Image (cartoon, rainbow, N blue to C red; front, side, top):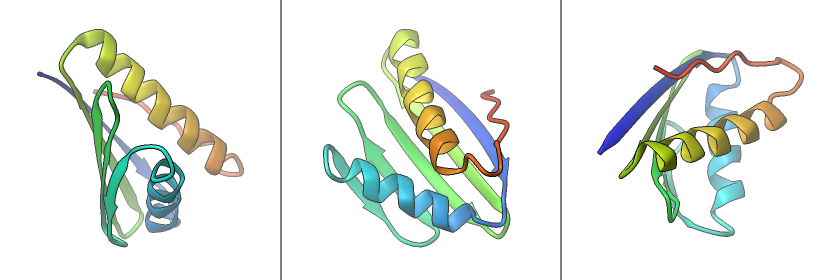
Length: 92
């Protein structure tokens, strides 16, 4: 199992997390509250946390390629939703 995490500082952490979850819920299995979210893709999963001004993303997948794909999907959508803030997403 491969895992990578990213943390974004934004005053809209919960709003972006819920927006991501609602967006993906039309296509995949999603669970979320204002503070926690979980998205199941066919190629991996993402756990999200919103706490104050911090939005945390943890992606997990069976292979490195799927991990990269999951991280790219999450980052590209977050960048689109938060375009006014131009978030810097660095995976570790």
